[in-house]
Amino acid sequence: MCPYSKRELVSLYFPETPTVDSAVSNLRLWIKRNGEVSEKLRETDYRTHSKIFTPQQVRILVEIFGEP
Image (cartoon, rainbow, N blue to C red; front, side, top):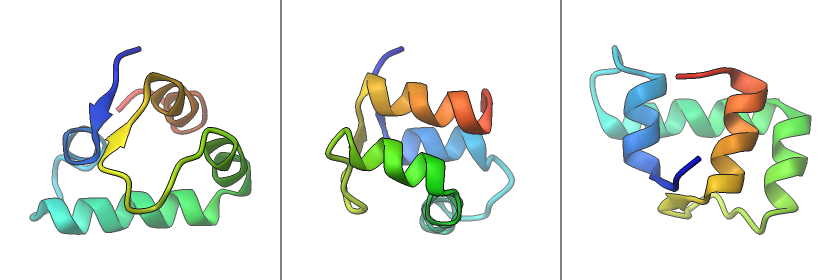
């Protein structure tokens, strides 16, 4: 897995969302509502306003939410 910018990753998960900001909000909501993802991301020092997902964080998202 390679690192992704948050904007790049949300555009893959939410291609039909009209704006990138809306897509980022959607992903934040997914993360907030999924305790397992929230906890695993916290263990990687993820911060809500981070601009980049590390390869480890991308792996967690794909593991739980599936391939975008």
